[in-house]
Image (tube, rainbow, N blue to C red; front, top):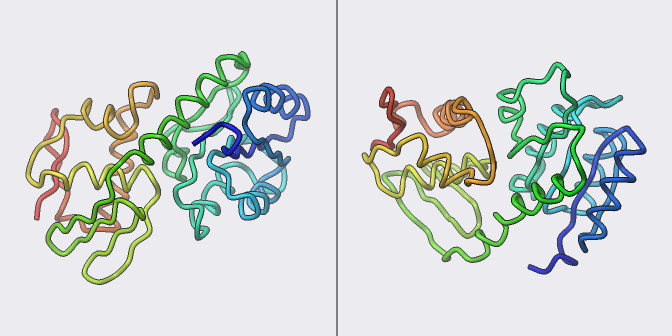
Length: 228
């Protein structure tokens, strides 16, 4: 996918952030759209169907956490990449952010070149997805459509956010195999994204709620495995 075809939605209530960050992303060749609060962000996301949303946390009317949850539950936007933009010292929990459905977070102030580098790292996942093989995998009563990012469990279709889907796809690729935590972080989040160990725990908890507690076994001090 060419840069000129990539759509980025930048959401912040600070005009300076919108101007500076927007300028740097536009200079890189991306299509950039902006919004100043969560309500505008949801509306713009539905209209533009962006590949990536850079979402401020503390905003009027609807904050970033609420907006992220709404977007994640909007048909067609389940797999849009979302990264939070948060100021140091804000009352913000990384775990809460990932729990809301974010893929990453960026702490401000941040140098424009560093932010662009992080954006490139996030967008690299789009290339990886486009290069993957079309594949439908059946594991027990679960059918995983890797091309459409769709899960069917016991005949019921389940919509999973991108990271939950990728984690499930990884664990089910080899049932009963224990995947070490560092392997999961590398395969699902990538080396370029720094996340805490609790991020995996949050996503496993959500998969247990949606797929079934009995399918996910914790191996203390090692990692997780999927059991039939």
